[in-house]
Length: 414
Image (cartoon, rainbow, N blue to C red; front, side):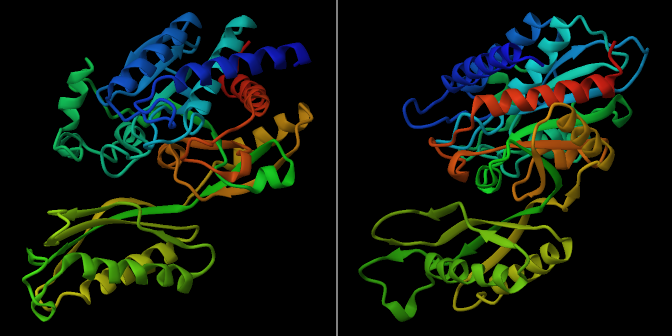
C-alpha cells in the first residue's frame, strides 16, 4: 500500500482508539470498561455504528459478543473472523483489546474501499469479558462461542455485588436468550491483533510479532476460613486468623513457580477479607492464584503444589478449599496461517519476529475449534493494564495492512 494509505489508516486508528477511550468509568485515570456496564453500552454502540458504516450486517449473540458480517459468494461457507475484546481491567489502558477490534473494522473498510467481494464471509468480531474483571474466569465471550462455557454456568456467574450475567445484560438491553454457542463448521479461521504487553518487540525495534504459541493459563480461587474475634480482647494463642494464614500461603507461592522454572509464573492479584474491619480478626479470606507456563506439565505440577500448600494450613481452627475458575492448556497457533502472515510481511517489506505470548487471549480458545493466529505490535516500555499503556498507531496501521492481505487470501476475495 502507498504511504498516503498508511497515513490515512494511522489517522483512523487514532480516531477509533481515542473515541473508545472516552467510554470509561474512571475519566482521567485510565480505562475502566466492565462488561455489561454503561461504558460497555457506549463502546458497543460505537462499534456497531462503524460496522454498519462499513457495510457489515450487525448482530449480537446471547452473551453480548458483536459480529459485523460481509457476506461471501459461497453458500453456507465458513467465515474468517478478525477481532479482539473491548472490555478492560479497572484503570487499564486504551489499547489492550480495542486495538484488535478497530483493526478488524479497518480490514472490513479496506474490503469496501477496494470493492472486494469475498467467497468466504468476513466477520469482524468484538468480544466481551476477556479480562474477567467483572465475572470470574475471563475469556467469557470466546468460551461462550465455542461451548466451553455452557448455558447453565453462564447464567450462574455473578459479579462481586451478586448481580448475575443475565441481569446485567438486561440492564443494557441485551438479550441473553439468543444463541451463544456457534457451530465450529461456520468458522474457517480466527485472526487477532493485540498489543504485546511486554518489552521484546520494542527492545528489538521490530514492528510485528508473529505469535507461535500462547502459554497455559489457570485461575484458582482459594478460600481460607477462621474465626472472627475482637482485636483487643482475643489472646494471640486463641486466634484462628484467616488473613494471617492466607498471608503465609501467598508468601510461599512464588517459590513454587521458581521451582518449576522455564518461565513459569504465579500471581495473587485479588484478595478479599471478611468482615474487613480494622478492629476485627478476619474470619474469612478469598484470594486468586493465577498460574501460567508454556508447558502443560508445569501447569499441572503447580496446581498440585498449590493445593498441597493450601491444604497444609488446615489446622488450629483454619479451614481451606481450592476452586478452579479457569483452565486453559498451552496452545500453538496455526502453522499455515503463520506462514501466510510471514509471506505477507515479506511482500510488504515489514520486519517481523516470532515469539510466544505470556498472556492469555481469545485466540487460545478459538484454536480448539478453528485455525487461529495472532499478530503482536510493540508496547511502549512493555507496560499494560495501566493508564500508561500505549502503542503507536503507525504499528497498528501496519498490522492492518498485513491482516488485510491475509484476509483477502483466506476469504479468496476478488
